Image (cartoon, rainbow, N blue to C red; front, side, top):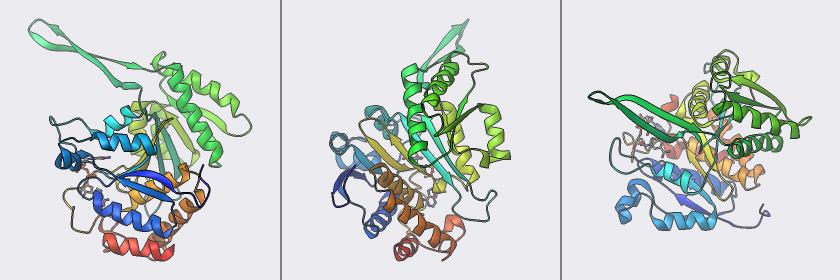
Length: 342
Ligand code: NAD
């Protein structure tokens, strides 16, 4: 943890499409809040290809290895063919095992009011390991498809410890373990077993319960307020984190952190939005809130809270909103409104 006056080196990847616009907005807001980051600017995605023919240049990896902390704008990934997602490569390269996705009501008047949920998704194991193959039958080479998931006790314990520790440090009351141990008894039973073991260490501080994934999905829609922190395996977490974003108005405003033992990368969940790139219309909120999570991560919760409060004020009290939220504000208008509140 840094002392208030210490500079914190961090890698900045502005990204593709609207990335540079939302990054500039975020930097202005961070500066107004007195954030102590000392940036090393690097490229990735299409920007990396254009700069040096590599969507994840070695200098970018080296910078993150040095700073162990990065803020990343969206990267364009070609669909079907082309290069592999730089986002996935970064997660693997730095073993970012925890995907942290808060979902909080920002704009009142939506389908659900006062949502404040945090989803912790295991990022490296489960069905995402991609151990898949086909079995040919007769003249059909793809008659049967087989895929296996891999969960380890060490991996399940590590992600559950992350979730309980996060809950304890952020004043959260409860962690819900989400699984499918009634059917996938080994694969997700092991996760549940490890989670219950971790929960014992937090007894009296953080409560614990568990849900089967399908029931959890329904209950999140019927009564989301019963949940606080949810921790789950990779595939279930992928689905539930988007479900939670839907509860508070969609993916457009969702921030995320990918956190490992040796590095942490914070990013907006949305993509590079090529349809509005360069027009000054993009909503910078998701990257701004990701930067606030980054401040939390390095122990500057006070500055993170100031940014979140300023964002709330700009949206709710000043009614300054970009087009995706039904407003007329440009990226710059919204940025100015948040800076003014700070
Ligand atoms: P997208 O999120 O870029 O865009 C979907 C829609 O949402 C578009 O209409 C866009 O204008 C709008 N939108 C997205 N962010 C917005 C913002 N901040 N403000 C206002 N409107 C916003 O998704 P897509 O079109 O499927 O993907 C475009 C590219 O982004 C693809 O190359 C994809 O691979 C990449 N992508 C990257 C990431 C990442 O780097 N984390 C995530 C998702 C998609």
